[in-house]
Length: 162
Image 1 (cartoon, rainbow, N blue to C red):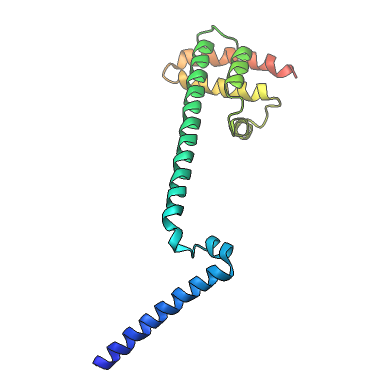
Image 2 (image 1 turned 180 degrees about the horizontal axis):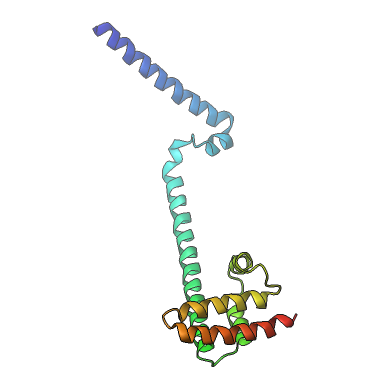
């Protein structure tokens, strides 16, 4: 039994040595390929430091985008409040929310999927604003019906403008 253990151990050491030599040879023969394949384990600390910097940079970028999106949502909520209170017309609310969300990735594409009948961007945003006004007044059905009737009438006027 002792002999088998020694042979297994020797074979393991030989295999490990062969793998090490193969990795070293791969780096000498094709250094770019070995880097892309992740075989240059000796540069691991450098890679992890770079990857950490990239992750930190990406996190800062995402936090900035999140902050911008929260400010856009707050601004839209404020505009919807003014619209519901009758202090702003639907057209003006749509223009303001369109301006606030200008450049927001996916905003208009999302609205297009929700409101396919809307022809213009202004109509898309107006539909969104009407929906938000309805959500805001969900707890007051009578006022909700009144405000939505007013907004639908304004939307019909808005729809005739191309």
